[in-house]
Image (tube, rainbow, N blue to C red; front, side):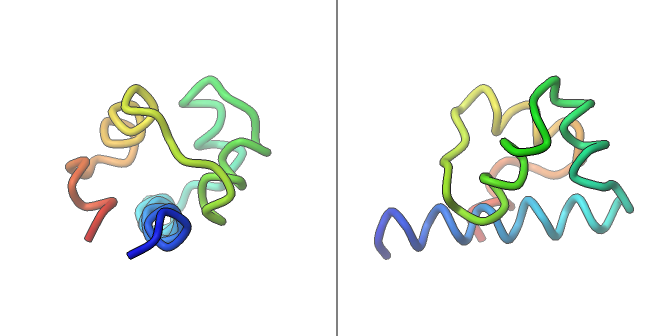
Length: 70
């Protein structure tokens, strides 16, 4: 798996978890204290989340970090 494919996988799983909680990208961004654009970039795989961001996403979206990689 390439780095791009891994970013896309993580992004898809972030989007799935967000939608499962019926959150908009804007609402998720507000909870993460980041921009809507950053959330969109994560979900499309154009940006890779840091460990700190993964931890925040895990808490807000109520999933274990490893779920983003499955």
